[in-house]
Each structure stands twice: as C-alpha cells, then as structure tokens.
Image 1 (tube, rainbow, N blue to C red):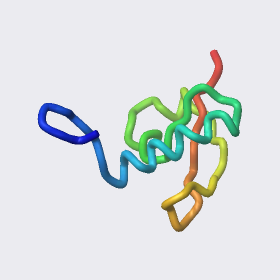
Image 2 (image 1 turned 90 degrees about the vertical axis):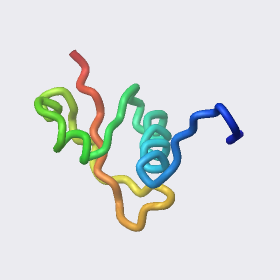
Image 3 (image 1 turned 180 degrees about the horizontal axis):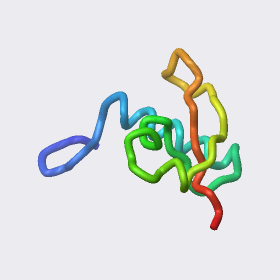
Length: 71
C-alpha cells in the first residue's frame, strides 16, 4: 500500500529487478544481477558468471543475467 509515511520504490529499474529475482528459482542460483550491474561495478565480472539472455515480462528483448559465482 502506498500512503503517507510509507516508502516505496517504483519504476522500470524496480520492475526489471523483480523480474530478474524471479529467475533465481528457474536457474537454481541464489543471486542474479543484470548486465548493467556487472558492467558498472568494478570487479563484478570476477564475481558473477554469465547465465545467458532470458525473456522477462515487461521487456521487449531478452535480458542478460549473471549469477553469483560459488566460492
């Protein structure tokens, strides 16, 4: 619910994040991020493995996702 005193996050980025999170069960990984995160965070490419492009609701094109590498 949205209302006075309630903080909410809405928008395209939040929707995409929610859809990517939904892929964790399908791909059997605990943490997934999008390509924007991997490309913008220094060192992220050494911590995440590519899981390929996936169709997600609300996106016209497949989204490249990356799973947290097991250490």
